[in-house]
Image 1 (spheres, helix red, strand yellow):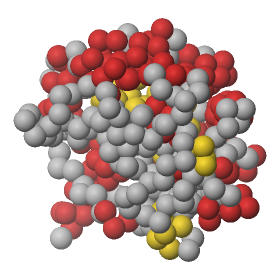
Image 2 (cartoon, rainbow, N blue to C red):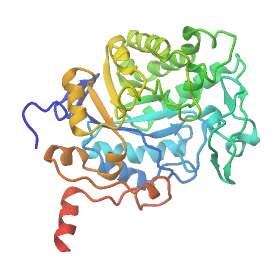
Image 3 (cartoon, rainbow, N blue to C red):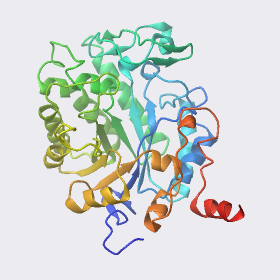
Length: 370
């Protein structure tokens, strides 16, 4: 049950927004968009979860070049803006707040998704070796990307700027830049992929340049305090690595702090303990970044509360628990049981496993009827 001292359920000012609690719905790919356009089903899904302090949408591609998965929504066409307007209107009617996560997958794409079956683009011509792309033609090895020419990079920055303008037109309260999990911004950041020798490669300052140019372009649209950035300093998803994540992401955190963005969203699991887990990067980033710090990585109510109380975080984002529990804040507040997520329907089509998870009262009624 909630006590007067629970920080997780206390309000927080995030720029011009007043968040009623510190529980954030993390971005989660759901693969339900029709022709990459959000639908009424998306509006229901996000509206059901409007009690979150903040909702961050599933990753949303900023251009056709940025597509890498089936049925993921975009934010680059008028039809997509109208689809997202259904979502933002529904969330706002329910009293919620919602940011769009802007995304370009870079080398995590496949030629079958690309205009004219061109090669995907990345910082360098280094393919993902592990896993497969999930394409309209079934699982396929990832395509080898081509390195963006230096004179093409401003065009990709402009795709993110256009995405921010589209998100503003769709009624979003702000945007989050997806600089995590091995997608295009991360492909410039980390030297496991970035082999460039120009002003976008080599030093941590050069490798951070792409992210910072995008951040500057997007904050010019929304204002810095309505922009967040998500990073994953130690994640190896999409075949990613870096030789010195503390040096790299410490620099990134300091530069983003200087730009006074709304929050830094850091993905770093908390489950493994030394000596099994490498030294955590989050404490350094927390020290370097002076804005709101959002933690993600398998938190529970108890570990989230400890992170807030210790000052390690200001906000905590939850993924699968929010997916399966539209009323997650209320369930955690009451100490009530949680619905178990149905992994088989995470990326399937249609309403099952999307908008049919019961709220607490519905679950209790169903149990009593048995």
